[in-house]
Image (cartoon, rainbow, N blue to C red):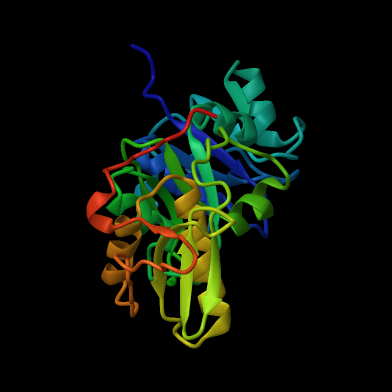
Length: 274
């Protein structure tokens, strides 16, 4: 009988980005053992795992892993990798694993600070029916993974750059409203589908916190560029209890701007093929 498949996740010391990988593997229903790389490490599968790691994440009664995923930079001379080589185990660097897993996905890095336990862009895409997936670290420091049917993955930008440097995963989205913009008009901020401000979409009232306002506007523009309808963006705002003011039916006769009423926007879940 073939042994039960189990992954050895070999990680460096004094780094915590690997916890996001562990959460992803758990969401994929992989059986995982975690070990820290060290030239002096003892390869003993009966030992405990990294301090603080929950014991239910591994089963010490098994004979050990059947394949190895290792963090970039961990040399072949590491005792765990040498042990794997002596048994002919498949060994894969984590960047290669992520490239394969996200090969057909659209990766959207986002910054924290807009939203609660879920990033604002994820909520917008979810409201619009894009069915996005999520790899996210909550305010309490816990990693959460939600794998849905859509092509978009929302992932912390700091995690991508901190763990993988300039590595680029997945595909680029094919953008829809590439020239969308916002303009401050008195006490309102108006959004347009083009830089010449002919296609009026709607407006919001700033909350008074400039860093938060700028972050919100940036996410709204990103969603518009991805093809999210204005009414889905507004619905996501309502869910977040952010004060939201719109005048979708307004028409500025003096500038010949053509408004886009919410009632006329068709359902759109544009995924892109870039």
